[in-house]
Length: 349
Image (cartoon, rainbow, N blue to C red; front, side):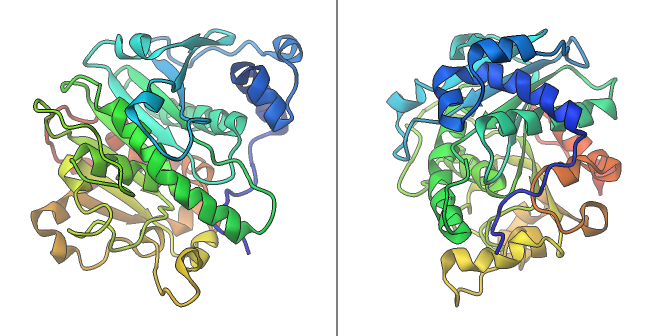
């Protein structure tokens, strides 16, 4: 039973090895030892000559790994940051991250379950390159690969998935905490697959002043609503979770437009209900889309659903979506050109 685990890699082997080598150089001795990777010296030798497709862009990795499942302001201060430079990942900090121009579009990308730190970076790099390759003239972009503790846990897959489900509120808290510190005029987009989509909707819920698993951002008198463009791929949230009173019932107040990709043939999401008990009957929004949207009132117009099963097939995870040029074209207006204020994306309707 494959429950919410990513599909098998499809990139050419040589390309995957090159990107993984660069990714492992970022991880550091402790992370490499934990994941069974090469030593830093070996990574230095293997490190390929890779440059960003567009020099105007910034590519970042932000990690909340190792911070525990009880998030706090103090723990958030210990998140790790790296920025990609030619041929290397350079260790950085929150100050440098926030020092980027206020108007620079910031796009967060979040993977789902069963990704090591290195695989998270490889998948994020792939997503970034696919987005940019089809839109070379788009505005400069800060692409943020979000790394959270989703490594495969030995044993039953259902047990593994339930543990990761329990980790998503903490990851959402840390993402919301960082996004809350971006200037109000910074355009923000977010994309995520599987549990990554759950982290995105959770962070939006927190930005709206809501609670998630008992956690909440510190109150701020000057906090203004955001106008985030969100893209959910194979989303592992209930198909009614966006209703008022539900776990992510406030999230749409922080959204400009939300693109929900629906794939009724997603093999992993067919087992989604087992996360909550054999008799739960719950279905994921990634297989059905949002249901009874009349309950959302005026917020319903913010949701755009697209059936993409014919493009991505039955595999679960982010890569099948970014491997399809047609699907990438659908998400580009949302991710590459989000507004600082509310605006309808006419091209996607």
